[in-house]
Image 1 (cartoon, rainbow, N blue to C red):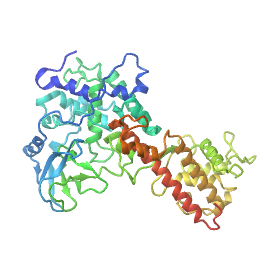
Image 2 (image 1 turned 180 degrees about the horizontal axis):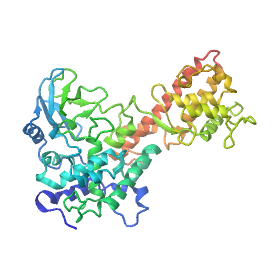
Image 3 (image 1 turned 30 degrees about the vertical axis):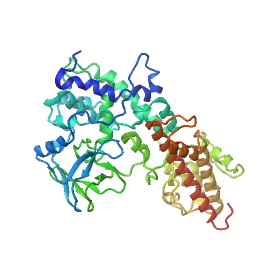
Image 4 (image 1 turned 90 degrees about the horizontal axis):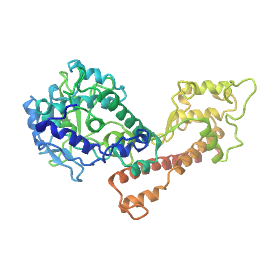
Length: 491
């Protein structure tokens, strides 16, 4: 198979390997299934690999775009580069005007070989679809119209769990994220082996004979998920937006991205911005799960963060015991002649749970805790239903409103439901190997319990799980207040 050529291509595989050498570390639970598979450890640098980022502004302007009052500068915390105000900016001012030809994406005009490869990637892995286009430009080197942009992409993306070592990944102690990491790694290795490895030398090869391996694909996927925008919505291909994608995230942004009717985009100031201030965009109302998986950071007290769990009766039965509610009627009381053959639930409860999409073969069992309100409405509605003695208690109650916080059926039912949910929170908290105070102390000292320094990835993992614990503790506190406020206060 041909190798990358000297001048502009010889550095490609080297930098891709450096940026994804931790692929095996994050895939330790996957790679043990693949004998002989080896990847080097990730170089967790966000240093740019090419020219000074100042060339990006020049390139955008050469392509017909406009750049006004902004500059690229290193972040003060050493985490990479960002877009900053180069002067006092006025509210409504257009800061970057990015023409369509500067937006790296794929469409019907993309070469058919690449589109055929893109179609092999599941829609859910939208970042991997765009990653293939990034790689096709990367192998072109200076022949690519996007070469100035590609050369300034980071060598590595720090903080992504996909490149965590074994210990930081374990330290998350949060199955929803570790499962996603495992799924991404499994797909990455499979796609590189089955779809990319056979391409060189064939008519279907969009990479000019260059072998794209898992290292290169992992680098491109990390770059895309941490930088791309879905301007056209979830049904349209994502796009890389040079210069604009150097804005960092805030839930209180001072800038916004504004699509224009001709396919062009502009970055505008939402407020007056003083000189030498970072320009901030909101990446959306994302939980820490998404921020960590795709961007490599978490936000303390994130208003959009939640704790995910799967609804099932065994979990509720255990929670009932923890809450000392064993004698309370729940689904365990079976009324002869009213239950289906496969469960202990009366048919009317099955039907109510089916309306909540928590029962049946196509049910969505994912529910959440934390945030506002502190309990997922579907989970709260389900537990209220399960504590009903007969269907008459639900008469006149719209199922859509059964999960409203504070809108209880009756005080006795509500006490049981809330105590059960508080017990679920307690059970979830007990599954972590540390309590919040221990995590806080370790993060404050920068050392683990053995006195060893915490790596940056370990700190991120501990911060992530600490935020989840805080959500559950807040939920327990809110539940306690709600019980105390019930008529009769029999909690």
